[in-house]
Length: 137
Image (cartoon, rainbow, N blue to C red; front, side):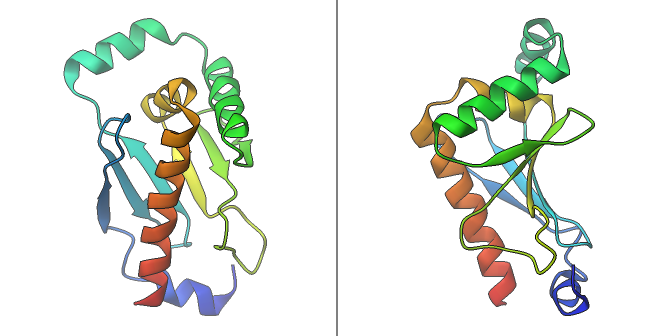
């Protein structure tokens, strides 16, 4: 990412904002020092246990979540470590062409893989709005 863009995000790496989207558990969006935004799901203890029992293979989970994103009309790519999916966000770009929004963690990917297309679109729209508002400030 270009130095000018990095300056926009400096000092914001620890900031986290809630993303509440009907049909998904509470989510948190955070930005790292390099300007990459990460969305994670916040699950209750019982939901975490159910997730652990339901999901056995991380690469299968990523493939299912990526398929759901595709059905929602959202471009993405699986991160090499198979615990995250980078999302191509409309209207938000980096000068280097890198992905700026990452759906991260087994809980997030499990929920996305089962969510309706309109729910996924609402999540990406909410995340994109947070990204834009921070860039404007």
